[in-house]
Amino acid sequence: MLQRGLQRLLEVFEHEGPSLYTLLTRLVLREDVAEELMQELFVKLANFRGLDKVKNLAAYTHKTATNMAFDWHKTGDKGPCRLDNAPEPVSGFISPLDKLSLDEEIKDVLCAISQLRGASREAFVMRYIQQQSYEYIAGEIGKTPHQVRSLCFKAMMHIRYVLSDKELRYSKKGGHGAED
Image (cartoon, rainbow, N blue to C red; front, side):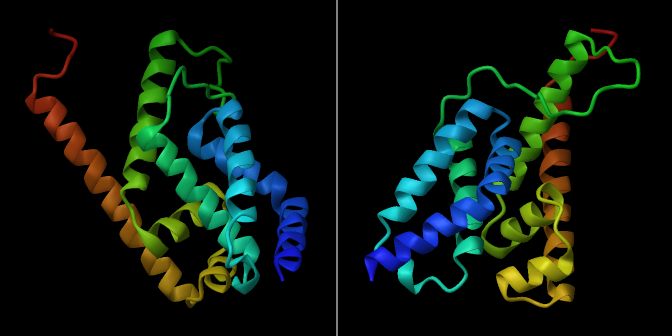
């Protein structure tokens, strides 16, 4: 039985490996960490005793990878943040100040996403980070496309609230402006 579960896991990693790596890279913003998390993900799932009972192993693997990435944000060594996959500006040059600002904005959004729980986070990540269709997500998480749209909408509202609340707290603390 254990051998069957491990064989299924190997098949999932063979088929889903590139998308798992892309997902992890987008969530942690570092390729070296994404590689480490891929290894940890495989080991964690290979040691999971109930692996043979998981109906949709690909979806379970993606969900576990997402949770591991957000756990890394909470406890991991952040080190320098690299945004190799960030869109390039039209001019082809981004100032150090603009890069720092972009880095901080992305970190804030990822932090806000990490506060989502359960199906909301799963649907949001699949929709806006993995760019999956509502229909696909619905099939993966056992909801209707309409329910997935609702989850994504509510998740987006929560993220906007968290980000606006952070901005409000920053401005009340006397954030730096041009006149400072």
